[in-house]
Length: 70
Image 1 (cartoon, rainbow, N blue to C red):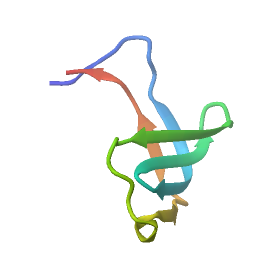
Image 2 (cartoon, rainbow, N blue to C red; image 1 turned 120 degrees about the vertical axis):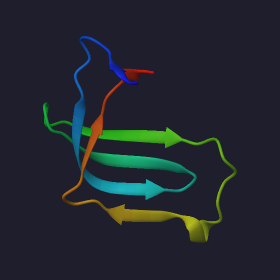
Image 3 (cartoon, rainbow, N blue to C red; image 1 turned 180 degrees about the vertical axis):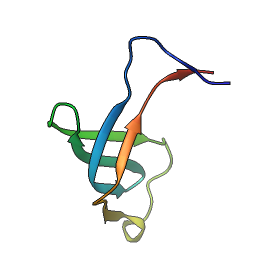
């Protein structure tokens, strides 16, 4: 069961773009501060071919980041 970690509030980001080029990058605006943010998830996998690279508009999507203990 997941247990929330005290004193760490979730972060909500209004997404503008999602890129996938071996790593996944989420870009958007932090809903609390209004600052632009970029979150990169590096999967340490071999580089995909250039044809596999994708950039998607993410209007209307919200990414919520939280940390929990398993």
